[in-house]
Length: 252
Ligand code: IPD
Ligand code: CA
Ligand code: CA
Image (cartoon, helix red, strand yellow):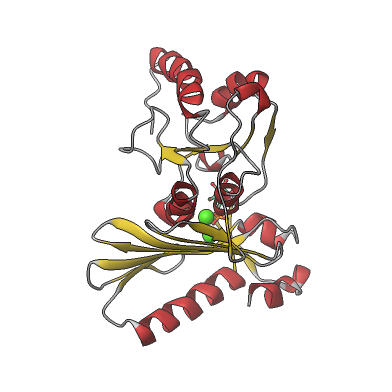
């Protein structure tokens, strides 16, 4: 469905939710389709979609990002995805991240592993920051947050092999799970951006936390890694968090 809209190029209707936060007619159409399909099959389930918000239901809840990476999508770049997570009693139990332009479908079920196009995947075994490639994003900038990702990037970049900014947090997490990245971090994300990707990473042997290594803030401060480098990144970020706190900046 998304590929059909992608072919429209400049004919695609695109609006600004905020100055740097786009939504296209494809985002709305894909979410409407998914909500209809879920309602037909599971009318009692709750749904939270990025574009249509909450739909009441039972303790089973679907979290939908109909297009994660809308900016990539509207610009004809391949790093965008449909991200769907199913929560039961507050824990993600099923995950699907579909990147149609990349031809990649990540699936995960709690306790039963993660796959890419049907093949089992596992995080990389690299242990040193100097041998690690990490991805990030800048939602904080477009939300005009005073507490931004830039100090974390400038402190971490000299210590790692390289950084990538692809444009879809869900695909970034799929890349961590499949061993193509050692980690991904970002500030100011929402549950629908990363709930599915978190389960894919964890079922592939990785670790997901907030910047302090805990779970309390892990949507507002996303850190997902292969596990081997996690504590090293937390230590680098701890210095930055202390310096920002000393400047009177309160972390999200
Ligand atoms: C965005 C993408 C992007 C990330 C932004 C997200 P959206 O999702 O995941 O990679 O950096 O923070 O908001 O807005 O295109 O669904
Ligand atoms: Ca998103
Ligand atoms: Ca989106």
